[in-house]
Length: 187
Image (cartoon, rainbow, N blue to C red; front, side, top):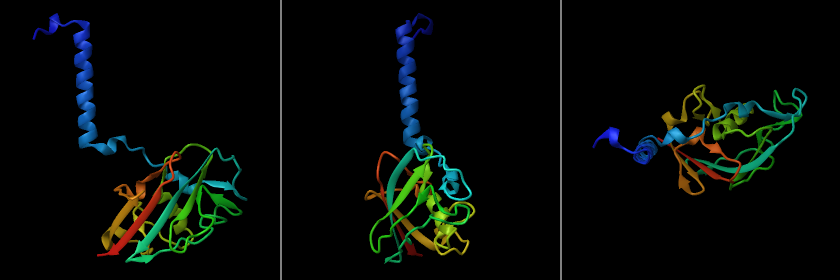
């Protein structure tokens, strides 16, 4: 084919076809490319309280979380993320009001701006209260021994009934209410 003899329409079509193929290959072979980056700062946000100005809430949404360790329900305490060190008389941007004894507990996500709030941010908040936390490299650490749970457990994560592999970095989004289930089984 003579490249010099191609019309503008043929050049545009060739460019569009090449772009489409490149996009398809990227989506198939590197799907994480399109995942938003987690805003880990969400675990430090505070609504009101003695140490922070109340900048107002412009985004308020929910996800639910249920955990089990070796087939035993792991309860999330009520008021997790409320009135904790660094946020006295306030609430962390991710917090719990009530706890579910056997089912899903509602995580309240309230921020002053739109953020990509990762599930791991809730564990950073919970860890400040002596609950399950995260290691320094942001891996689950439910027994707070400083060892990544990936070394001690098989971990399954279901989101709305479907398996997910985003785990700690899973983004809880404003336009949907996710049911997140974490299942830890000792190795």
